[in-house]
Image (cartoon, rainbow, N blue to C red):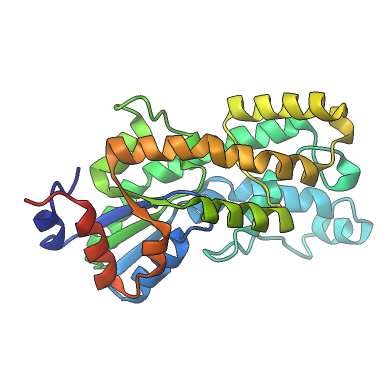
Length: 286
């Protein structure tokens, strides 16, 4: 690991970490806390995906919808208005909206082939944005003068790596630049994530194999045709399966490339010093 023991971590003048795990367990909260200390540069993989790699696709989708409205169409065609994505670290809705949900268009869904196409674009973007961590870790110090760096990885990082391959290119690149830190939740946390998701289901990224499996199973289980699937019902039905699918992958990633901290421990972190000590406790003694 980049920091093989507690002393090397505590004494480092340039600490670099990459937080990963399920969305909703504290990655962004912890990243914001570290950034607010004034000494940590915060790099958001999802923000990078939605700006550098998916920004044009997102805006084109906005324009496609606007062109269906005669009033907006005329203004767009005459260059009287422009449409842009206002994506931020705190508001990633433009990216989620583009990903969409598979199912009946009259229920807000998109066709499964178009959905799979958008998923493939997201996969390429996530790999690239994660590999960019190395570039921004260097920029943070060389250009902006930040001594420390935190990468807030996408919740779907586990979907674009092969945890059984110690030479996986994405994780090898990430671990060469940062200390990967998995934020692990308890069963109670999982239940809370499921409850939140059921209340407000949001678009997700799935690995192609997992998506294909749950899509086929859902159609067989419900006897529904692809064109009549209720998008929200499908992603609600698949969410717990997604969590159960991801947990062992996260665990293997932490075992091979990094360390594990508990979500409850992250919630108790009040400042950057607390975080430094939490990580140190998970590293071997010299």
